[in-house]
Length: 310
Image (cartoon, helix red, strand yellow):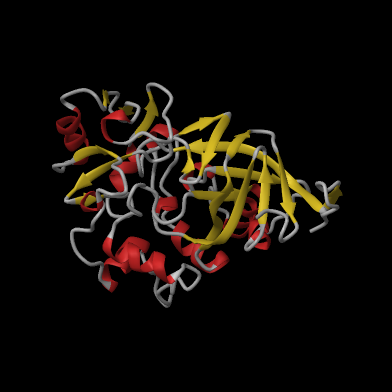
């Protein structure tokens, strides 16, 4: 891919513009449909307001286990704040394909949500990291559980997750999510339009970005069907006021194949097989925030030389 050179910061380091932010997404409730926003505050814990609520039943649940969660969507009733936990978390409204709605501060929210999911559940705001019991798994995940969550395909080896640091894997063996947060493992997920087009051209399937639930969608300057973001692993991207550290490839589960009726997303039964066959079950990248700041749609995405950002 041809990169365009631009001027570097004081000290003469070279930096390279590689694209621009085309969409920003936050998901108020874990595994529910989210909301597109024009600007986002990125903090150490990720995108402000992203996954500050979750559905619990003995432990935090996701659409990997309960695909019905993707039938619902959520939006904030006021702007969230990064330091909020428990009762301080901004309220949300949840919508169902049956036309009904319920807010998180409605006393009937748990019965309503349970009726939607046909389960006994509780809508839980995130708790401070010190409340580790809130995040603890109900039991250890078996190999069979992992195979079921990702819909391991015939002839496919179980993913090794070798790019995930050992301390994080150890933590996630005990906790459903990192204590203090409701994201699966990493604070942010970034995807490029190149990668969506790459998968679409090889599979013929609908690769609507909303299937893959990124926080940041980037349009590369020189769009070609390629897994462009993989080239950025181990590097830093300056995006708006923030700097993002690209950590690893994202291993995909079954969620992109599931229907999201309120968003007009139909079921794609062949999607998991296509992701395995064409991209080895990896699409998009896991990201940490190296320098907090505001990011807006239309912001340039700059690939920094190694060592530019401490």
